[in-house]
Image (cartoon, rainbow, N blue to C red; front, side, top):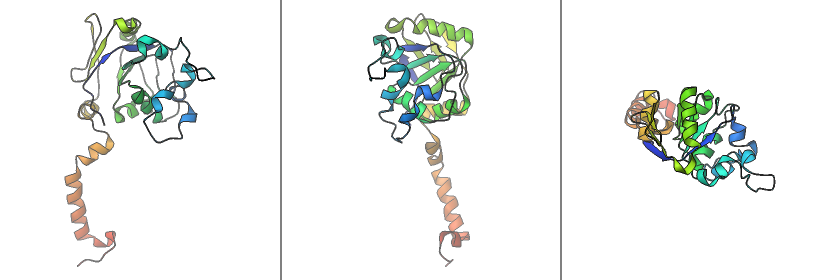
Length: 207
């Protein structure tokens, strides 16, 4: 998994509340298990007309936000079904950080497992960040995971809280598999001992 340390760039404002996972990645795109390419379908029903043309008023279709790395979203982002394709699509588009006042639990957990930093802030802080995001290409927002700070274009700083274990996993680029591989030596030692003590579990008799 790609490490997360800092991300700086334009933040795209998405003020709607209760944006669920079906809006993030509609169900017709869930047939694949490939993560690459899902970014083009991110927010597909909000982003494209029925003929496939772009809706010019949708935020990610606007020139200032086409390469946004940060998403500032309304309350209860990522609610709905527990599809992991949602963070896959967000990451593939190029967004590394989503900021809101609240997230659905499963979506929130899936973000950490896919190298995305979900940040919870107060309603007052969110409004400040929306103001920064509304300025488009004229404003750069920076997120520093190590210091747990969001810095706005005018130098204002928003501090955020994060679970220390999840923070460390993001900083080191460790998903569930990566965390397991860190313990490979202990796992190998346990398996060697078990093979010696209980060889029948491995399909052969003790020597």
